[in-house]
Image 1 (cartoon, rainbow, N blue to C red):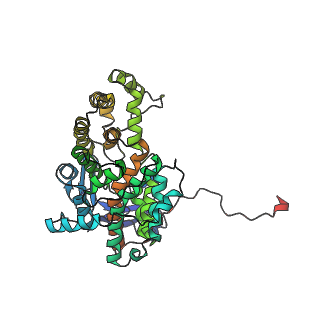
Image 2 (image 1 turned 45 degrees about the horizontal axis):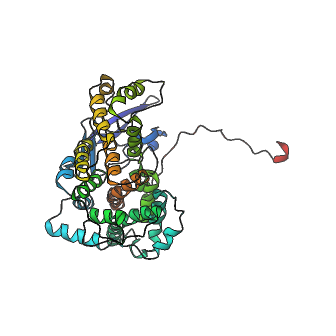
Image 3 (image 1 turned 90 degrees about the vertical axis):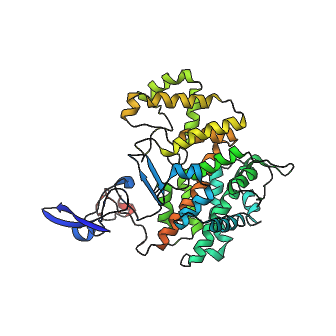
Length: 428
């Protein structure tokens, strides 16, 4: 809703722009008519001060360490909810009733199988292909198998394709892992939960029964919840930008996976785990903390700090508790975890880190948990993509349904040559 006016002075002339007020967060200056009024653009690399859309899905207050999904705090959802319930919440705006929840989980469960020809598609990749490369290709190819749900102007088509993407992503990710290790693909088991089914398809084999460990299933479900959506990050913005052109949903989610693959976005938990392994034992922490403080040393503490959060990442609190539960259930004795706990304690009590607000984020612990469960580091980002698909799909649906949505077209500050005349090749 419009509120008071913001005044901008350009070349001695004053221009008024409306200020919009959301339900949470700072007011926003509406500059959609800036170019028409002033013949000027804004310059904002990385869009750090630009709201690219209007959304009712997720709210982050980085200063206070708050993350809300449809108004619900992430800590409450991670402790009390399930990933399927959070998926319903993000897609539909409200928590489901018992009947709505049963219907939704049943729909997702019966969409988990992949078309049988997808087996041949996987075999076209090299065995050492990165799981994210496989997921980019396979998800993009889904549009060639499911023509019946690619009409984005049809709400029913959008609903079906959304359910298919959420349902099939665990199968796609698990098969990427199986292909890499040379084991047979495991078909979904409709008697298991969304997360339990994924664990079985990843680690089970046809020769024997696979038993889902409740603590591991709960931990994975929490990890999926904590990664489900995170407002207008790079990959989500990529999905929205691709979708603004009218591209089909499978292509849009494939674009999001490609963006997430970047180490600055989806690879942080792998980097944090590698750092903890490099440190090795708690007695070596002081040396690495001093290195992190040294401006001339390229070493940085991975898993600390966040682009948005300038306080403790609310997701990290849940992760710390979850690590202990997984380690106890699997009887893991890993010095990496003790190193992580000690590093967190020392960093939080160090004035340097306090001043710079470098607090542990969700990646600091998630890599340790995933490694303990048995995932290789190459799968970490693929698991992130699996969970974030729910957020991407919800954001895509919201964008398509917005009557004010137009195709994305960022402007630029041009710094190249001014107009010049062409010189024939023999005259140069």
